Amino acid sequence: MSTEDAGASDAAATATEEPEHENAMQDVIAVDSDDEPQGTVNRLDAHTGDGIRHRAFTCLVFDSNGRLLLGQRAPGKRLWGTYWDGTVASHPVEGQTQKEATRQRLEEELGITPDQYDEVALTDRFEYKRYFENAGLEWEVCAVLKVTLEDDALDPDEEEIAGLLWVDYEHLHEHPEWYRQLRLCPWFEIAMRRDFE
Image 1 (cartoon, rainbow, N blue to C red):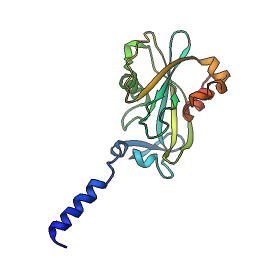
Image 2: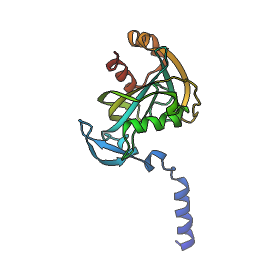
Image 3: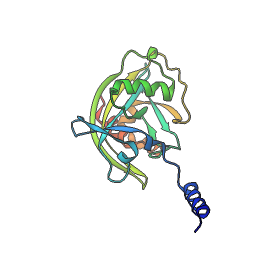
């Protein structure tokens, strides 16, 4: 084989390789069952194979009437795309608290700025592990945070949020079966059941 043939062969192989998933370029914080940091791990590695337990959060956004804002995950999400969440969920990065990460994601995903609410309250924390089809899994110690909006103006990022829906939280808590058609994210179902006052 000539060096030209070898070069063409290498170029063809490179052209047929799948592009690296954006999650492969990010890290998450690995934790033990008590949410104590164990270093950082690749985000894609944490969500594939047997998974790696890591730190996460979900934020429940309420209005002044006690309604909860559900956010539908964008269809391009690798895990649980088009499922409904309450309201945003993500992972803090190293050196970032869950409250700081929550403020950041609220602004990035929904255009909600800190002047629209008084505080971010940490109300609960739980560990869970769930697989999603053949695409991967979540194995997280998930903090639950709450925000009550004084101003409910929203500017959702369609790359992150496919739809929004205000629901009566007590009604949803008492009758989750009536919302079955929404296909709720597993971490939100757990948070909703544990965090009801």
